[in-house]
Length: 354
Ligand code: SAM
Image 1 (cartoon, protein in one colour):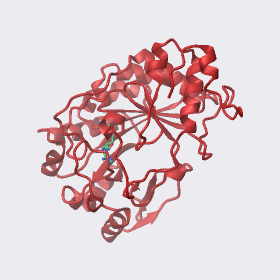
Image 2: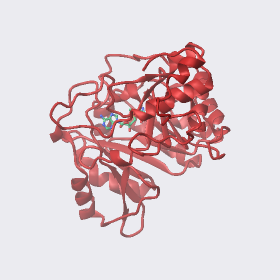
Image 3: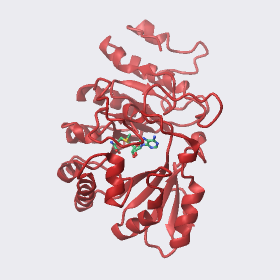
Image 4: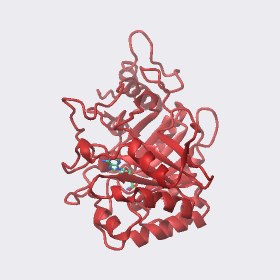
């Protein structure tokens, strides 16, 4: 993206046919998808070294914006039609100002005048101490990543001693604090934790959490991904159904990424996010902001749109709005995982913000 510095430059963002204007309002991409979900990576630092994500050999690679800069950009995104903001990373709980950031977003208003929904995705390691401050700050919901219910398998994945107990305490603290629902993300990898599927279903029922299984995507720092490592949705549903009969549940919101299944006896539900075997790009409503202030319109984008540079150059709110609208227009139709010629993006998941 170019780097216009003044109002004239901002106007040059507008297409000659006028299809994008500062008055456009709701964010819609060139395929007609409405963009309502903003995922903000507030750091690319992480305290875990999950085998399918970080090597742990490199630290943070990208700058972090100040809270004031994030808040300004989030406010502008909200003015354009974003309704939900998810704070992620890296590990977002490493940002000491996270509760203040949450509280400041909650008092903002969406384009339609509502308080935005604010969620956090975390590995849960620091949640025991932060659950209450985050709830008090107005956090709407939390998703904790937990890739095994067996402590040894879990720590083989995170590569951090004591992580299983810490995350367990974090989940309990979130429930006690009244964060509802507490969701669990579990990335399944063939040969690492695919033996955990049935036990996870039992865990979801016992602890009243919503477990979301996620198919492994080629976004790791290492070169681990192969199609054979992906545990597909069909297998997960079949295996759980053999132990606990399942019934498909309807979408709660249009374009929901997870396929939801209820346990037939009514005790809880599970979800499966299947970006590899049952891609949902046609209903994608997401845009991402990296920790260094760049827009990514797809996890697998090969281009980024630098809002931080525009803010450093003194761009006005209208100029930033215009830059966002233009970035959204370039949103990719779909990803190409598994197709010939597929190229991993230059940033891995931990540096994009999952
Ligand atoms: N540190 C936080 C956490 O652990 O939840 C937030 C960042 S993490 C990158 C966000 C989510 O992305 C986690 O649920 C993680 O399991 C998932 N994730 C990371 N790499 C992935 C991959 N290659 N494929 C699918 N999910 C992945």
